[in-house]
Image 1 (cartoon, rainbow, N blue to C red):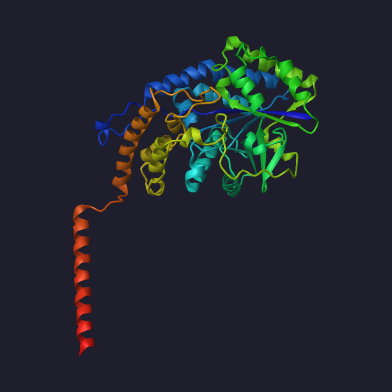
Image 2 (spheres, rainbow, N blue to C red; image 1 turned 90 degrees about the horizontal axis):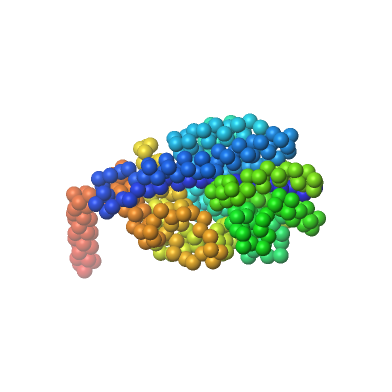
Length: 426
């Protein structure tokens, strides 16, 4: 029997306000509260609440045969709690059905997996604790930020105790291999995203120029049913905004989803949670990924976040602070540290041409350079706050005292050398 696994990602960063150079050292609050509140409420009304209602109906009407999973960042959950608590309540209703799985991921949807292993582990732990607190579920399958994955990251995930992970089906990695099978890296089992089916829903569903338009539930399920026999695991992973925002209610996206269980039953296709899918097979072919890949753009690499000097400068300055921030006890400073790590900030600085014509995150800035300047102003103030708690530079008085001590020691050593030379001559 073929299996279809749906996974939706939800992440919203804290948007930064316009932070000018003269505010550095004077204003330690960095966020645009109005933008954060209005964006959260807009998405809740147009997408999340209607989507949760639809999925709950699908689970109930299919006698719990429909199943779905979510990867929700800690920053998104915080904003739901603050600005749209009804979204949290609707996810709790879904969690009670037993047909929903929540995945582990970095709390801030950050790039920590590539830059700092300790920070990476800390954020995964924080997000898992948040999921447990809100929904009573402990994540067992891992989903990294933007599906960034490599053999090194697989090793880090294994060290944290996870036995399975979701990754991108990048063509330059899979080659002739199919994404519709399970793989593994060492003992870590891997579920691979089917990029075509995912993008059919995310980008092409509402495109009337697409040759397959309109996409119906019958057609979608038939593509899976008629796939080669050995291809038995189909993983569709998209942003949750696919339902309601990228594809409006008028596009028929919600009716499309409601019809899926009907045609799945007709074509003998089962829905499955990631943990269920990954538990079916004991062994699977090994998949090696020496360099980080992601689900972004045609390149499927990390160039969307660190492809230019602006991004690398910002990232390097940020993660230089890691060890000292971990020593801090200031709660607000630590929360700012999480917020500033969201991958979105660096995506806004991207200057490359998007070869697939799609931008995953709408930038609030006029240009990547505007995004860089605003972020670096904020980061400069943040660095000063960290420096105030754990200075890395020596104050002038201390420096002068140290230089004087070194100078005196040099004089003493020279005098001793001259004395030894004098004795040697005698």
